[in-house]
Length: 381
Ligand SMILES: [Zn+2]
Image (cartoon, rainbow, N blue to C red):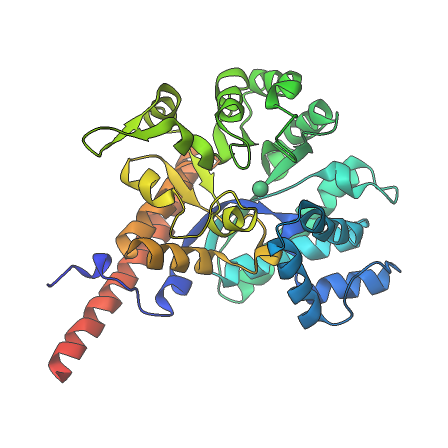
C-alpha cells in the first residue's frame, strides 16, 4: 500500500518535466520549431511549404508523419532540410534546439544530422559543421542564462543510401575536439545494409572513435547483426526489432536467441524512440512497444525523441507516455536516464559527473517532494 515515492504511479503532472533527462537519439532536421521553418523559408525565398502559419504547418507535419505514407513522411524532411542551407539558418536551428531541449529538462543530449544534406547552396561540409557547433554553443549559453544547464555532443550522420560515409567519418574525427562526439548512418534500411559502409567503420575503429548505426527499425535482425558483428557499432539506433530474436518458451517465459542474448549481455545500448516507432508503423502503439519487455529482461534500453517536430513530441512526453503505458515511477525513469548517460560518447569521468551532480540529485529532489505531497495528503485526509 505504502509504496516508496520513487515507485509511485501515476507520476503527478509536472514532475517528469522537471526531471533531469538524457537524450541520445534526436535529429537536428527533425526538431525545428514550426515558426522557424516559416521564417527561414521567407528569408531564403523557399516557396514549397505546404502551409502559411505555424499552427497549420505543425499540423501538416504531424499529419504527414502519421499518414503511413513514406513519401509524405520524407517530404517533411525535404522542407526542414530545404530551409537550412545557409550558415545562419543552421546556427539558428542548433541554437533553438539547445534552448528547447534544456527547457524540457534535458541535461545531456547527442544531436545528429547529415552535413551532406546541407550543401545545396554552396556551403562546404566544414562550414556546415562549424555553423552547427556555433549554434549549439550560443544555445547552450542562452539556456544557462535562463537557469538550465545542458551539454550537447554532436553526431555526424552519413546517409546509408549515398557514398559519402568515409568522408563524413573523417569529418567527425577531425572535429572530435570541438564538440563532435560520434558518427551515425541513417536512411532507408532495406537494400542498404550497414556493411556497404565498412570502410567508414573500419576507419573509425582505427581512430578509436565512437559510432551508432540506425538498425533494426523497420528492417529486422540481419541489419542489427551486421551493425554489431561486422561494423562494430557501439550503440543501435532503434534496434527495436531485436524482439524478433526473443520467443516465448513452453513455461511462458521469454527465451533469448543468440543475437538478443549477445546484445543484452554485452550491454549494447538500444536508442529506442517509442512515438517514432508507432509513427513509422514499426510498432502498433506505445503500450505494445517492446521497450517494456526489453527493460524487464535487463537490456540497456534508453528512451528518445527521434524527430520532435514530426512526432509532435519531447523527452517529457516520451517519458510520460512510457510511464503511463508500463506503470513506471520516478525510479524507473532515473534508471533509464542513467542507462542513457552511461551509454553517451563523452569521456567516462564526464558521464559520471553528470550522473552524480545532476541526475541523481535531481531525482532525489523530486522523490522528496513527492513524499512531502503524500504526507500532506495523509494529514489532510
Ligand atoms: Zn533516427
